[in-house]
Image 1 (spheres, rainbow, N blue to C red):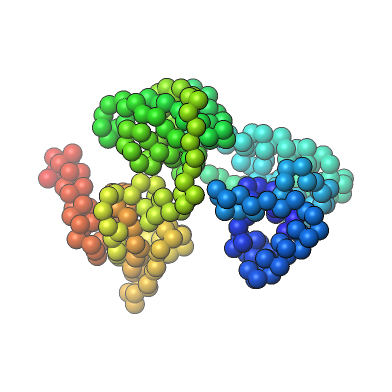
Image 2 (cartoon, rainbow, N blue to C red):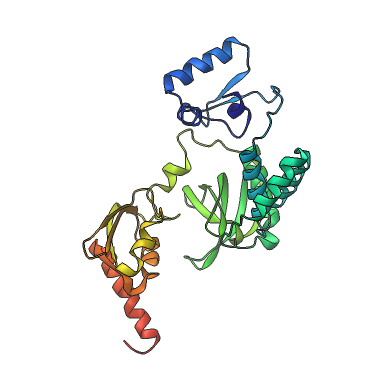
Length: 313
């Protein structure tokens, strides 16, 4: 538990219970033991997590072979992903770790690491926006607002807004900043690569205590949920792609049901239909929307416009 509380951004009671494989009652008991032992335990009221004071230090424990292998493989492999902050330094950190291991273990792990490869989708390059990403990191750390000029594709114009950045999120291929926008008067999501200009300010802000990415994203299929109620979506997939669909965890609310003819019925509760419509279209004629009618209509309209592109409509 001390190791968990020393590392990362802190843990709540549920997280400590899960990582230590103990009950919530035992977590509270152990936290009280740490307090009585004068371990400088802190509680972050903003994020509702426990952590140890930065001045507290225990010597690092020795790595097991499996732990060292995991770090080496992840850092070596992901360090090759271009334009991804943190990963290049992670690779050099892995080299330092490898050099500190006993020679026999180092030789064993090198052979095992060479047999493992990880391939991810290439992220959209930050390019000349790297400084904007770094400014956002520093602004979030210092809780300072920024002013941005943003290329809004939906409005087809450049908007200017004062942003209180809450979180940076990397998902699929791109980096996004999520925070309260003055022009929208609400929390919004902005693609970092579409920020044309960023100006730090001296204005400070606080992240609402009840804010969390999980709550903000809700049941969005991926990142952006449409306004309005959630939808109960049902899609039937053909035998050809059914197993492929069933093997992947696409959404936190998903459920699958196999039919006697080998087809698969996929269901999920999603906020908005735009994002999931593109996913369904990716399966072409191997997917049929069973409901709701709004999604059926959306898919049909897409199909009609596709036919018109080829003058076959």
